[in-house]
Image (cartoon, rainbow, N blue to C red; front, side):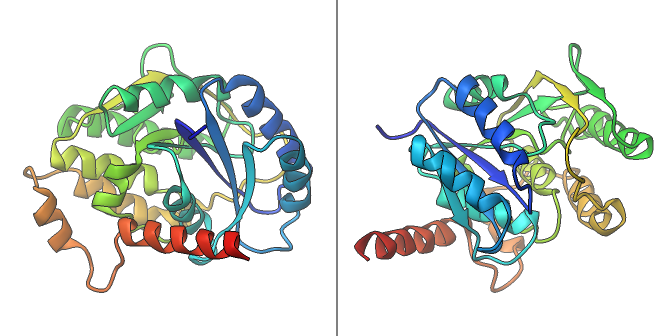
Length: 266
């Protein structure tokens, strides 16, 4: 059965921690789904645990990212590899609530291009995490919602669902950190495409160490924060702004499809 939702999980040496994450997702996601565990290197400690689960449940796949190292490239690769019309990005650290994956996916099926799990709308909450990072994230989300009229009060949260055709249309330019969620929200806002949100309770990770580096990733966040403000763009004008030589997500998806067909042939 073709999946209705592709769950994209970027990982880096999560090791045995991935077992708890996948167990929860497999238990809570009721829609036909594929779960793509995207890793940067064959020797990643997450891989053997993922492969063991995949042998028991065909929904799970360990996918080697060939776009370059780092979370942004892993997410780009995962969305390009997605076979479903909806891709949900979630983290491996247990911060996100997998019970909401189906609800986010259904919002996209109803017509929104970005569906956000929001910590900062009524009913949402963030538990734990660095105070300064939490303050910046909340401020960015609220100002974008009020002044740029973004359809979510939590534009920086990575836990989002995307219309994969929309992503392949507008492309992903981020190459460093976790700002893809903000980039695609900003692009949807400038294009006038629908963005929606549902409340979520985010819990700081209990196992392992976070790979988030605020100082390193801040320039990317600032770029897309300010991009969200401005006059309405058309798809053509948005494409014209893309740096020369940057491949579209649609072309990347075609390359990934060809690679998969080659692997199947072998």
